[in-house]
Image 1 (spheres, rainbow, N blue to C red):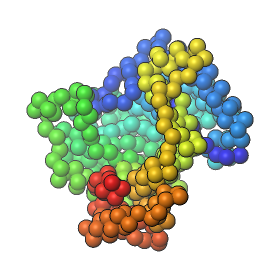
Image 2 (cartoon, rainbow, N blue to C red; image 1 turned 135 degrees about the vertical axis):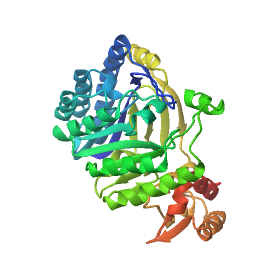
Image 3 (cartoon, helix red, strand yellow; image 1 turned 45 degrees about the horizontal axis):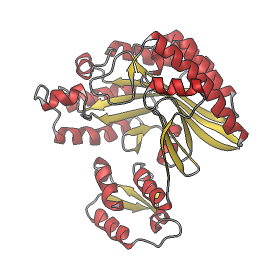
Image 4 (cartoon, rainbow, N blue to C red; image 1 turned 60 degrees about the horizontal axis):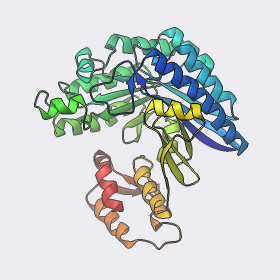
Length: 380
C-alpha cells in the first residue's frame, strides 16, 4: 500500500470574519444538507478508487470554513464514510478544524468516537476586544472551555491558532496569549501575522484610515518572540508559523510542505497526484450540482514540469526548519546544475538569511522572518 493524504473542505461558517478571503459562506440548513450529501457520495467513490489503486489513508484533514457548524451527526458520518472506504495506516492522523463557540463536549466526544484523533482550534486571541476586531463570533471564555472539553473527551493531540498584528493588540498581549495556551498543555500551536487581503472589510477599514495596523517592528518582535516563548514550554518552530513538541507536528501539513501526494474533496479543494495538480469548483453549489449529475467538478489543472517541481521543492522545503537537502539544488532532473542558485545562496548566507547544517540548507531565524522574499530571490 502507498500512503496518501486526503483533505475535505467544508465551506460554511456562522459568519465570515472581517479578514477572511477563504472559500467560505454563511451556513444555512438546506445548503449544508445538500453539500454533505454530495460529499458523502464523492468521498465514497473517490476513496474506493484510491483503494483499488493500492493506496492507503495516512492523514485525513477536514477544514474550512468551520466544519463544526455542520450538525455533529453529519460530520461524524462523513468521518465514518472516509475511514471505511479505503485501508487506513495504523498511525493515521485524523484532524478536524473547529471554532470555539461551535462545539460542546458532546460534539467533541462524537467526533472522537467517529475516529478523529486531532483537533485544531481557531482561537486567534484570548481577548474579547481583539476577537471582535477580527469579527470572530466566539469569546475568550468559550476558547478556554473548548480546550477543557477537548482534553476531557480525549483529544491529547490538540492545536490552536493565534493571530498577531491585530489592530489594538500589543506585543505583550500576544505574548500573554502564547504563554496561556502553552501552559494549558497544547502540544501544537500556530501563530500567523494578520494579513489585509484585498476585498475584505478589514482591508477597506485600513485603507480608509479607520483602523491602524500594528507596526512592522512590533510584528517582527511578535514573530521572534513566539519562537523564544514557546521553546520555554518545549514547543519548537518546525515551520515558519508552526510550533510543536517533538512528534506532535501536523503530519497532514507536512505532506504539503514535503510535496507528498494528496486528494482534495469539496468545493475549492486542491489535489496533487502523480505530478499533476488540479482544483475543484470554488462555489459550493457548483460542486453539489456536478456530483449530483455525475460530471467533473474540476475547475482547472496543471502538469508539474521537472523545473516547476524543483522550484516548488525549494520554496516549500525552506518553510520547514529542517530545510532542504543540498542535492535538491542540483537543478531539475535531466537538467544541469544551475550556477546562479549557488551564488544567490552564498549571498543570502553572507547576509545571515540562510545557513548550511548537516548537508541541508535552511533559513536562519532572521531568514524565517522574510521567508517568502528569500525563497523568491533564491529561485528567480
